[in-house]
Amino acid sequence: MLELEAAPAVDPLCPHCSRDLTKVLFRELSGMMGRRFIYFCYHCHKVLGISHRKGFWMG
Image 1 (cartoon, rainbow, N blue to C red):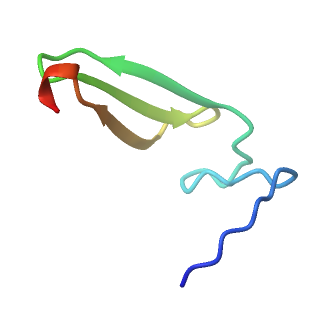
Image 2 (image 1 turned 90 degrees about the horizontal axis):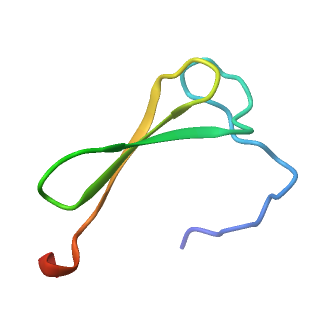
């Protein structure tokens, strides 16, 4: 089993520029299939991930 431990004093590193991720920027992507967000590094602006939140009618 994977163990989880809270680390509030540790900032994660950007996998692209290796700087501390003290701030993550995001932007909503427009579309017909719910709400999508793209997250990117504050320093180098490279993409960290994309999320998708389904609309209430999609289940």
